[in-house]
Figure 1 (spheres, rainbow, N blue to C red):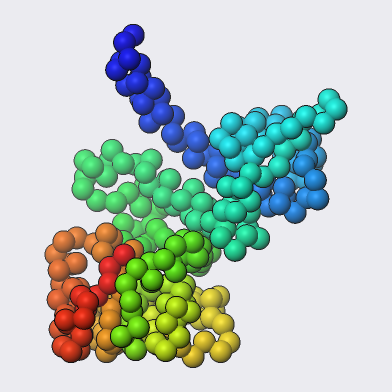
Figure 2 (cartoon, one colour):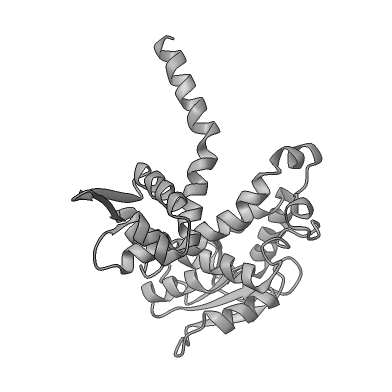
Amino acid sequence: MDCSEDRAYRLLNEYSNGFMISQVLFTACELGVFDLLAEAPEPLGSAVVAARLGTSPRGTELLLDACASLELLTVETRGERAVCQNTELSRTFLARASPKSQHNMQLYLSRTTYLCWGHLAAAVREGKNQYTKAFGVPSNELFTAIYRSEAEQLQFMRGLQEAWSVHGGAVMAAFDLSPFPLICDLGGGSGALARECVSLYPECRVIVFDVSEVVRMAKKHFSFPGEEQVSFREGDFFKDPLPEADLYILARVLHDWTDEKCSHLLARIHHTCKPENWNLVPSFLSV
């Protein structure tokens, strides 16, 4: 096998086995491996991990070995016993107690996204989502799978909040938004990005505009006392009047919709945005 053929074969194996890596990561998150090790005062052996998690000793040993091979855990030998602990990656991004934890996002990817991708061939053949096959819910609306229960919707919202906790500040700092005293975050969910915005620009106010069920969840699970700069308003940004603002943010929104719907939404924003702001930066910020 020549060099190019060898590289091609290695790539093939990486691509075809990638789902196994995902499942190791998702399973360790779901079982609480990284949380247990983060709370432990010292590295733990697989038998102790299994006992505390209530899992199979042999299965746990294999899972921890797989995590170590992926650099999610480190392993050292103490006497005749192998013990493991979190790496910087898992300590920072996978343990729930970390301020940068992506734990909920991993669970969302595992429980929703992964199941959808299992029906990709059918989706390509039919040109539509496969929510009915994957979850037994109607497939006509984009977010029916994500919002199929309050628990799943909360998981998704927490996952997005975690994502913004890592890079939301950098996104909001990419442009100087200080000239815009009133900002509207369309489809802003829990208000995580809005909070990043007001922490950088304390003189501005942000309206989070989202559908009624999301706003109710945001107020119930994500609101904090004294947040006068962030407010929530219910509505469908395709149909209902948009709140007046100096700047509109579309964060992780446009990729969800067809070109026709995106054009319609952008036209609505252009019509609503104050004309005096058109020459400062585009009247919307899409990330």
